[in-house]
Length: 77
Image 1: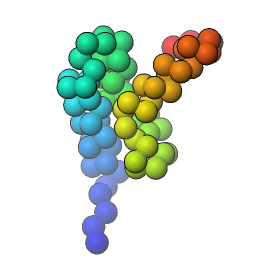
Image 2: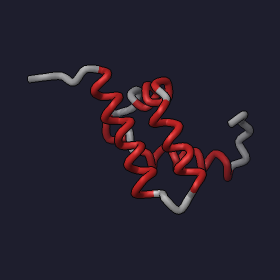
Image 3: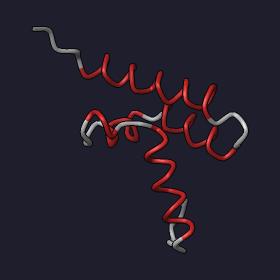
């Protein structure tokens, strides 16, 4: 059984975020910007790796951000 290196996993995850911005949310410039930012940030991708593999989907983080904004969450971002 082979295990992907951390770099391979991060690259695959970054590719998924890029694909999501290019295919799934092209009409929402904010979501495209967030996806691009995550794809370029090893820190943010590393945070994604702290979740279960099935929860590493871009739309889940975008939905969580959306919910926090609607709830009036105050954050510097």
